[in-house]
Image (cartoon, rainbow over all chains, first blue to last red; front, side, top):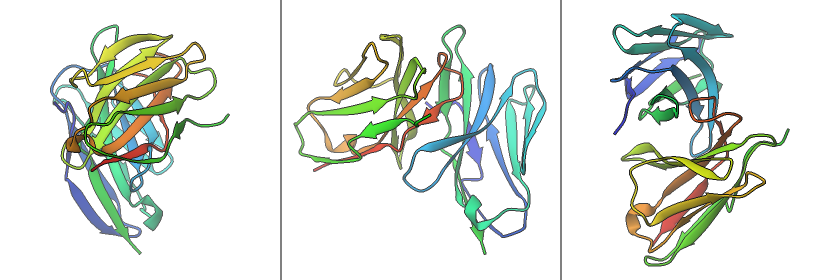
Length: 112
Length: 113
């Protein structure tokens, strides 16, 4: 079963706008990660946020984590056509042998 | 460093056959995980190997198996293929155990007819 669930399932915006994707999960986690996947290809790691962190930035990416609500959000600012991809959150949990569980993803389309 | 490589990139098999997929992790990475990605089920964890030992296993039937060699290269095998096994199979490596950042290969696209 999926641990993380992304929302929305699909998002279409214009170049230059900001894109926000949300992820909710069910059990306690060690960390939460965001990945990007271009159509039919491998995933690329974007950012990792630990359970004791609330916010993290990397370039145009901003990730927040609210462990009390068991949710995270990924904000991409000033989006570009090249940001068009599927975005997945993945939660790491499971005690000493962490298991990385992926959500079903948000398909982001950035129109030029 | 070279990235994760997977071979072959594309495969077409017939129901009932078996298939072996190969994954070479990033040099120095000891953990290799396998995932199945389908439009309906999304990304599902198959298993993870760390230093030649299976550390974690997902909820897949015994037809799905894997192994890891002393050089950290990994193979997964699917026996008695079913139409529902058609998917993108992704391999990912990491320096540490599961939960660390995963570096993914390009995947093997398996089509079962």
